[in-house]
Every structure is written in structure tokens, then in C-alpha cells.
Image (cartoon, rainbow, N blue to C red):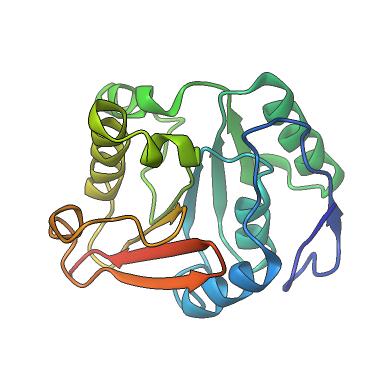
Length: 194
């Protein structure tokens, strides 16, 4: 079980889907991340991409985000996220899309009214995508670039990786990107320049 660390739903426990690739961000790292984003979350539209347990989206809503869209390919994980949103009474503020995240740029090209552009993106692909190297790694980084490109000035993109894996060349597309390490995991966050 996971615990929401602050806000309206502080202390509420959330189930973790029994899916091999799901590895929720540790509580200490989540607290540090949201402390960093304290000004950006209230009123924000948040996209939780490769949502897994959905905990980042639920933390954001608990702290005042206007809306969360969770993107998760695994059917069981998507069902668990939907059930949790219903249990928390989040109504129309939380929406789950069960699909491969790599299809997101195509959906945005269609300008669907049901897909609001994000102010804040959480991006948490399977570690294997980073470790594989080659085409798989290039593809996942291209998706992160595409998601970051949808942000308005001042918007924030956060990526969760297995340690400090991004090279100087990969980071060059995101001037000012910051990194924090939490044990064997790292968070990178980038604020789109105004």
C-alpha cells in the first residue's frame, strides 16, 4: 500500500497494482518532488504518463491540481487507478486513458477536447527503456521531448529514471534541467522557459 503524503487526502492509503513493471516512487522522493512543485501544482492540469499506481496524480489532486489525466497501458493497473479515483470521490477531476503512451503525440495532433494540454507532466517509463539503449532509449526520450513541447511557458516536465542515466547530450535539449538522486533512482525536472 502507498500513502498520500499531504493535502486533502493526506494519509489515505492506495493499493499498488500487481504488475511487474510498477515501481512507485518512494515516499521520501515524492515529498521532495512536491515540495519543489509547491507553486506549480495548485490549479494545474497534470498528465501522469506511465502512471503505474497513479500515486503521483493522486498526490497532485490532493495538493490542489485541477485535473489529472493518467495514461497507463496495463489493463489491471488502469482498473486499479480508476477504482482508487472513485474511492477518493474525485469525480470529473481524474481521467484514465488505457493506452500505450507512445500514441500520445498522435492524439494531441487530433486536438481532442477531452485531452487538455498539461501544465505539469510526470513521465515514469519502465527502467528497461532507459537501460536498453539504442532505438528503445531514443524512442522513450523522443516521447519525453514531445510531452515537454506541449507545456506552456513555465510548465514543468518530470522524468523518473534508474539513477543518473541521462547523458550531457540528452540533457542539452532541456536547458536548466535539474536532477535529484534518491537511492538508486533519480528525478529530473525541467521548467519550460517563459
